[in-house]
Amino acid sequence: LIRRRIHGTSKEQRLEYSATQGDEVEDLFQLLARAKVLFGAEAVSVGAIASDYQRLRVEGVCARLGLTSLAFLWRLNQRTLLRAMVEERVEAVTVKVAALGLHPD
Image (tube, rainbow, N blue to C red; front, top):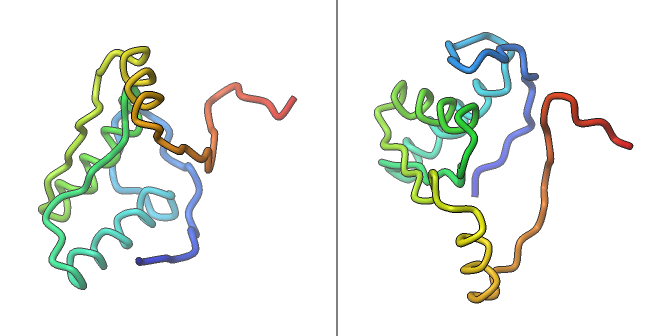
């Protein structure tokens, strides 16, 4: 397990991401760079299903580090995926929800 306090914020919000000092994606870069050194990581599995925003950021970080991005759930039918998760008794915990226009109320 590798942990680190996130210092960045979502500074670069365009769909296409380029390395931006102080952006939260750069924290991900640092964590994955460390995993590559400590564990010899060669790939990253990302849970993106429909979010180009998320997928493109992980793919960009992976490209910069020479890692392979694995997105096994990408573009799967969400109803089919949810049914399969229920059938397999997947225990899911929501850690964070974020979206433009999403308000606490």
